[in-house]
Amino acid sequence: MADRKPFHHGNLRAVLLDQAQVVLHERGLSALSLRELAREAGVSHAAPRKHFIDRDALLDALAERGFARLAERLRDAAAGEPDDFRRALHATASAYIDFAVAEPALLDLMFAAKADSPSDGVRSAVTHQLETLLSIGARGVAAGAYAEADVERLILVLSASVQGIGALVTSRRITVSQSEALIDDAVALFLGGASTDSWRAFADEHPRQIWKDAAL
Amino acid sequence: MADRKPFHHGNLRAVLLDQAQVVLHERGLSALSLRELAREAGVSHAAPRKHFIDRDALLDALAERGFARLAERLRDAAAGEPDDFRRALHATASAYIDFAVAEPALLDLMFAAKADSPSDGVRSAVTHQLETLLSIGARGVAAGAYAEADVERLILVLSASVQGIGALVTSRRITVSQSEALIDDAVALFLGGASTDSWRAFADEHPRQIWKDAAL
DNA sequence: ACCTGAACACCGTTCAAGT
DNA sequence: ACCTGAACACCGTTCAAGT
Image 1: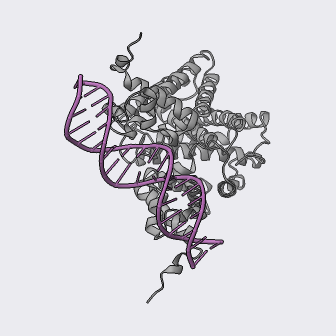
Image 2 (image 1 turned 135 degrees about the vertical axis):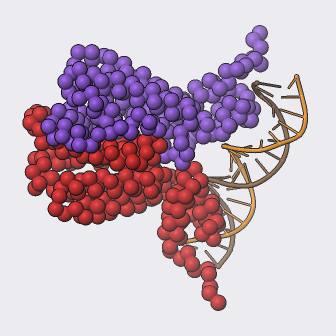
Image 3 (image 1 turned 180 degrees about the vertical axis):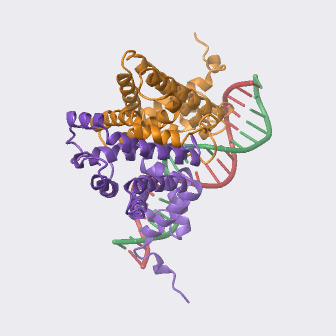
C-alpha cells in the first residue's frame, strides 16, 4: 500500500541525527558509524554524504544539538527556583551533572579537543548556552551576591568548575553522590568568595574586558 | 652488521607506547591505529596483541602515563614557589593549563567518559596525582588559608575548576590568554571563599567523610 | 614467550552513474 | 537535488602456525 520511496525526501538528515544520538547514548562514540546509520535508515552508505561531508560533520551536529538540549535544561532548572538565588544556582549545577550522568558520551563530544575552530553551528549553540548561563548569573546581582561587572567572569569560573566536576563523574573518578557533595561545596565556595572584600579588591585590580569578543 | 631481529626482545611495549604518544600529540586520537604502530615498529600487525589486548588497553596505558607526567609537572610547578602559597597554587593551575594546551588529545583521553570502571593502572596513576595535589593543598593549612579538615574537598573543587578551564581551552571555547585570566580569577575566588565565615559554617554543617574510600 | 600471515568483518571516502 | 553501487585503502580482531 504505502510507497516507501519518498520516506527520506528531505528529512534524511534528521533521521540520521536522531539515530546517531541513540547510538551515542547506548553504545558510545566508537560504535557510531555512518555506514550503520545509513543501513538503519534504509539508504545506501553514500547517501549521508549529501547531509554530512564526513563523520566529523555529523559529530559537530550532534554536539550542537547537545548544547541546545543542555541549555534548555539549565534554564528550566534555574526557573524552578525563582525565589532563592542560591537554590537556583545549585539546581542549575545539579542539572548539569544530571546531564553528564545521562549522556556521558555526548558531553565528551561537546568538549572534545578540536584541532580547528568550532563550526558556526557549534559556536552559536555555545554562545546561546553562555547567554543562558549569564542570564541566570544576572539574578545574583539583584540578589546582592556580587557586582554586575563581575557576572561574566564569575559565571565562567563556576561553569568551568561544574564542567570539571562533570568530567570527574563521566570518567568514573568520583561517584554520583560524591559529585553532589562537590557541587554543594563549589556553590558555597563560589558565593562565599564572590562576596568577600578580597575578591572585590582583586576584581577591581584586574578588570577583564576580553569576554565580549571571545571565541565563545 | 647489526642484527635487527632481537630489537624487540621485551621492549616492544615501550616502543609502541612511545610512538602512540607521538601520534596522539601530532595527529590526534582518531589517527591512532594499532596497525600503523606495528608497521612503524617493524613488527606484524598482530604482534601488539601480546602487550595490549585491544585498542582500549593501549589508550588506558597512554592515559596512565599522562597522569604520571601531569602529576610530575604539577609537583614541580608548586615546588618552584616554596615561599608563597598563593603563587604556588597559581603556578600549579597554570602548569595544568600548559599541559592541556600542549597535549589536548591526551588530556581528552585521560578524562574520556568510560562505560566501565578505570583499569588498575589508571586508578593508581589517578590516586598518585590526587595525592600530589593534596600535598600541595596541605601547604594552605600551614599558610593559614583554610582548615586541615577541608583540604580534600577544597582541593577537589579547585582541581575540578582547573580541569574545566582546561576543557574550555582544548575545545576552543576560550583562548589561552582568556584561560590565564580565568585561572587568576578561580584562584582568587577559591582562596577568598575558603577563608570566609560563611564557608566555615557551611563546611561544619556538611562534613564529608566519603573521599577516603573514593573510586579516585 | 613472542611473533607471523592469512582471513573475517567491518570502516570512511570517492566518484561515475542513475532518477 | 538526492541517491546508488562499485571501488579503494584502510581498520580491529582472531587464530593456526612458526621459532
